[in-house]
Image (cartoon, rainbow, N blue to C red; front, side):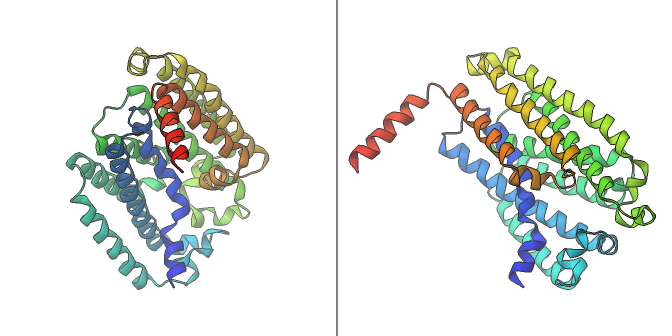
Length: 308
């Protein structure tokens, strides 16, 4: 029962909520305990909030999930969890989120409420409208970045927002393409996801090319923008762009050659080259943005190891 509830919450999908930490990384406060704790708290709230959204969607889409080759194994669709049990679990999660609101900034609470509203609108109507469905998914990622910024009271660069929009559109469109490529019986396509009838693999590929280019260009322009150079005191952040390009290219390779686009989370968490690329990118950003802090950390580490 407990394992089924955990499965229902879809913790594997929480990787999407790491977008919350983007403002922390680029605000030069990663090594500030107060900022780090605030960002971690925001991450937890988003994880719980996204789990409640998944539960609501699973309840609403139970019939269509039973027609899907993979989604039919979800706890509610498979009958492992009853709708009544799911509703009780949902109530508990919402209660925890409301309690955590008392420790959050009002602006962050507003972002979470907006996140819930946008997902409700998406589930009820937008998910069946071509193009708007992927834009609403993209909006959810943008809210994660804005929420992360609100949690620590820092401003977000316009270029960062644009980069988030493009990369989330890329991921959403890739998911639609992956779903299309997995369809065996096109007669049942509406039972699996109605909006898929409005897409085609060729159309999704064209959209993805635009989204991929937009991601790379927006990020590159962010790294060399006047505000970024002034804030970080260096123009070296441009050297992290190749990691972004490689990540996009590797993702497209897995989507086209390995047919893995249906689950972005699986690609990010199981593909070793992408994982290594993300780690190197993060380390490169730390070294470039926090260069003055590195010697302090090094000396502190030496002091600790000397003591022991």
